[in-house]
Image 1 (cartoon, rainbow, N blue to C red):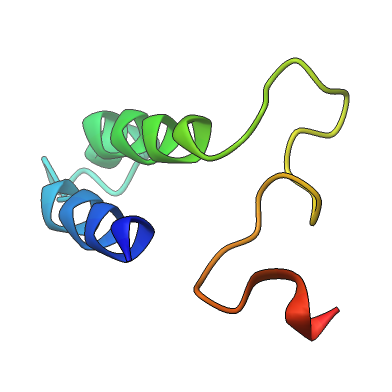
Image 2 (image 1 turned 180 degrees about the horizontal axis):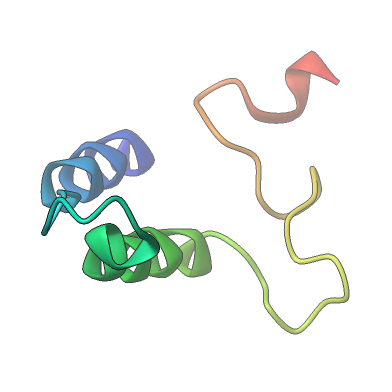
Length: 64
């Protein structure tokens, strides 16, 4: 439940800052999304996003 609320809040904060059609258009939004990913992963591992520590959604590992 908390993950879903956090995800919705993160997506509300993501926006386009300019219309130059370059990577700079989303520079703050990229940082916001990176922060969200860091909250749910372990960066000390070689592969921080895997099914052991970073499942997404309410079902989790039951689909694997």
